[in-house]
Image 1 (tube, one colour):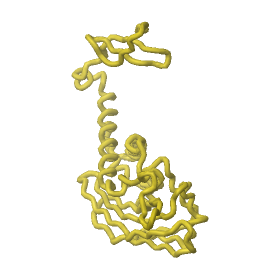
Image 2 (tube, helix red, strand yellow):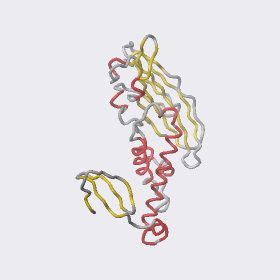
Image 3 (tube, one colour):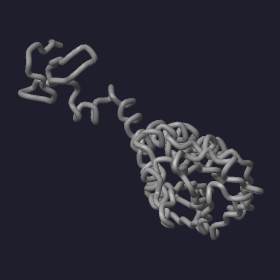
Image 4 (cartoon, one colour):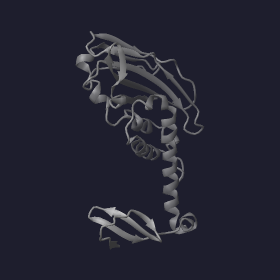
Length: 248
């Protein structure tokens, strides 16, 4: 490895040399490494191939879930969502105790109690954690999917972002098969409340979903600012929450 000195700062590959910026300046290294063909065929790299295959299965599972919830995620996500969900799926695939090494799959892991527990309480927006935003007790009916918040007082039981005048609560039921990718998503009617509203009995009940996959119960909180009678999404949804309350 060599250090690049001079006025010209280059990053990238040129004539077999890779130029990159490190913590202590710009560096050069020759392009090299083990060939893709050798990794795919050499018996010495069997563990590498197994790890890569399981990595791919976890990535696919995360993609399936994001796609199934795309209508909700577009208003409640952060830039780290794909990597955070990928890490979660890697833990879940470890719960697959029936498949051989290299074939362990989150789809199987999610059929186990521990696999379901690992996905429960996942926040799709890492900048808006539900437990930090909602400070009210709630109940979840795992049979019907209904979420209830008795005597909800938005002004004191919400950690609302500055500028927010209203909040919309919405629940969702999702059944997704991580093997076939079949999915069924149902949403409750949205409940829009002023932040300074009086106590309100909240009951969010989506229509039942169908399917033989994994069923999830989710809660979304979206914040708005009212100007001249019109409610506008606050900061393009940067403070919105979307959380998996239960996996059944």
